[in-house]
Image (tube, rainbow, N blue to C red; front, side, top):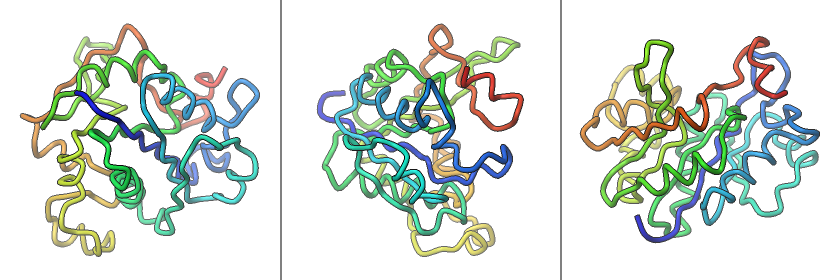
Length: 216
C-alpha cells in the first residue's frame, strides 16, 4: 500500500486487572512503556502516531516524552476500548493518511520488524493484521492491525452517539464500546489478511502479574 500510515496507539486504560496504574507508565528499559511503543511504530515505518490517553493522562503526559506524538485524550475511556478506538481513528483520519495502524500500548514485544511486515502486506481496500501461532499451531489474529483508510472510516460505524449500554442492547454493526473494532473485523473476515509474525514476536499483552516478565 502506497502513501502515509498514521498509527493509533491505544493507551487509555487504567490497568485495573494488573493493579499498577495506567499501563502506559509501566517501566520498560528505564522509561515509560508508551515511549518505547511510539519509537517502535515510527521505526517500523509509520509516518505519525496518535496516542490515545485516558486514565491518569496528566501523569502520563508529565512522565513520558511524547514530543513526536499527537496526544488525543479520550474523556469517555471508562466506557471501554471502543471509545478510545473511535477517538484515535478520528484523530488519525484528520491527517488524510492512506492507512491507519492500530497498536496496543501493553504489547512490549512489538518490534519495528513486526510493524514493517504488516505495513508491507497492506493493500488498498483491505485489512492486514499481525498473526501469532498458538501452542497448537493455529494462527491467531492479533495486533497491530492495518486498515485501509476507507475501511477505517467504515469501522467507525453509525453508532458514535451510543453509550455502552445502548450499543449492547441494539447490537448494531460498528465499533463496540468494550472491544474496539473486533466486531467489525469478525463480521468481515473476507477483508482481513492475517500476516504470520510468529518468527518476530509472540503478540502477548501485559494483563496480569505473571505477564510482567515481558517487561524484563
